[in-house]
Image 1: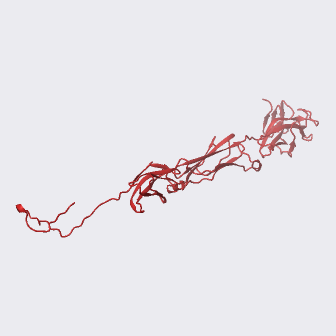
Image 2 (image 1 turned 90 degrees about the horizontal axis):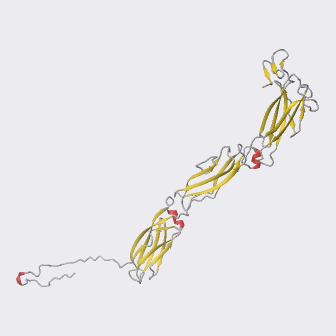
Image 3 (image 1 turned 90 degrees about the vertical axis):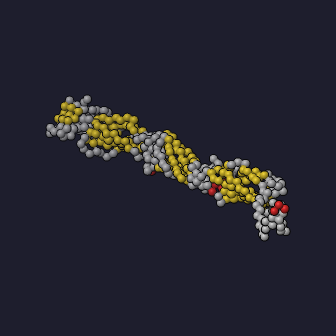
Length: 372
């Protein structure tokens, strides 16, 4: 712009005045921009643990640059020598602590252009996204399972017994990753013996046999999950049992005599669950006249008969016996049987208060049938 102001006054030819413009003061304002470099992000999204790259277009090859990488409260400053066309920085995984509740966030790369004297000629900023890589998941060290047995024998054997034991399932070492926190827990079992939305579960009594698979899962504040599995085996268990039972009237030497025998002969063999090599079954027997009290319990040996009654069994009376099989666990199976009186077509009890067909009469005011 050229501003001309005549120094003399007067008029030009044709009547124009050449002192029309009079300038007493002047202010000139100039707007200018430094000739700074420009940049662009090589990628708009970078996973933490990987390198972010800023391409630099230098306005002058003699210019150097300074790049500041920033994410939340985290930052890093790089000085880029003249002649370099880019800046690269590997985003530390611990920067993810800036986004504990999200899987991505906005970061920036600020480019400063420096002249040969180190003066800042201009600044520009470029945004990009930092993401949490798929490998960043919550921590879950393990899931453990232990048997729970109120029975001291089963507890000593450390077994899961069908119909007797419970299982305690625990999630161990759960925690967030790079600032996240655990928001939920999950425990499921297959086949199902229980489930929970907690870090531990004690099942009810186990009524599934065989292998049980446990899947434990934790979810963090980023919505990421981690799972672990474990398994345990439930052993079959049942009450002790009788392989067979023999019971009849006999003579003193054990010979069966259903008419004149005044002794009782009892023989059996018991078995038990093979849940542990230490499990054993034993048997006892008690004898009583029907309607009366039982005798002292007598231990039995497998496949070996015992003779009871001391010759005192009345031939016109019936006797009941109780067999009990008990295993090491303490479970008892009871069998109640009867040794009939001598065989009668019809028997009237002394006093006339009971009647029996095919057997002696039983308790007062009853009728007893020994035949089909």
